[in-house]
Image 1 (tube, one colour):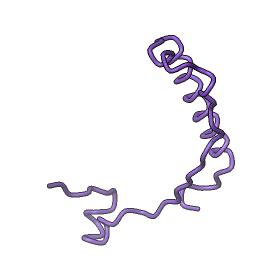
Image 2 (image 1 turned 60 degrees about the horizontal axis):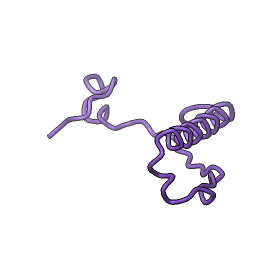
Image 3 (image 1 turned 30 degrees about the vertical axis):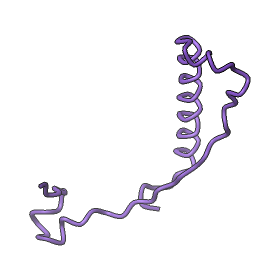
Image 4 (image 1 turned 135 degrees about the vertical axis):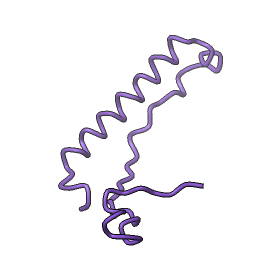
Length: 75
């Protein structure tokens, strides 16, 4: 059991417990090709580290690009 705490809860009563609306964006990035690796490459820790680092960098770059385009949290 839990109860949501918002900054306006005590002053607005039960109406203050409603969360503010926000806009969500879902964006799919370019696929990272992995079909050039043999199946046993999944056991190589350095290869996995490089691939996860590449995925992390691509996601972060996409987030920065979307952040620049954002006008407001609510719009």
